[in-house]
Amino acid sequence: MEIIVPLIVVLFIVIGIVKKVGVFDAFLTGAKEGLCTAYMIAPTLVGLITAVTMLRSSGAVDMLTELVTPLAEKLGFPAEIVPVAVLRPVSGGGSTALLIGIFEKFGPDSFAGKVVSVMAGSTETTFYAIAVYYGSVGIKKTRHTLFSGLCADFTAVVFSVLTVRLFMR
Image 1 (cartoon, rainbow, N blue to C red):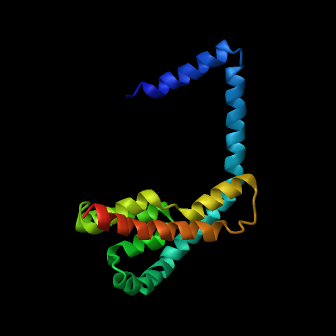
Image 2 (image 1 turned 180 degrees about the vertical axis):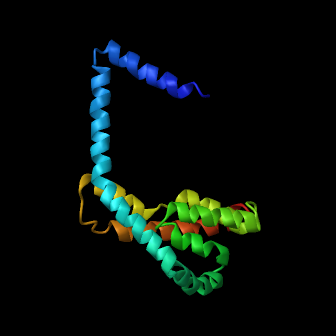
Image 3 (image 1 turned 30 degrees about the vertical axis):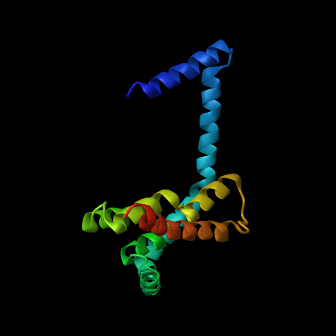
């Protein structure tokens, strides 16, 4: 298994040589473009990381979770998944930490464990994706992207619960 990546690199080099492409020059051009892209999105990422840290530290995520939990319980959603559902669009790392906490407390085969597993695979870190992808190409106005992304995340959360309830219980 460890040999696959080196073999792919060698394959690209051989194909480049056969097609008479300046392999090293092409590599340098790609590396330069990659660094330029990283430079362009760095301010956006710093702003996003700062905002996520402030949200978590201020208790805003906890307040939103407390606000949503009673409604979620009435609709049949396990209360344990609400913090993950709230934090997932904002922070992939933070929501993964909560997911691991659910695994440790309830077990990965519990209803909540299965729901957050499906949810982790079907939701997106919407704010991060918008910041990185739009920031890398210089788009300033996101128009309907944020609303659409959050609607998709909400739909994924609902269907995560329904899917586990129907097929994995």
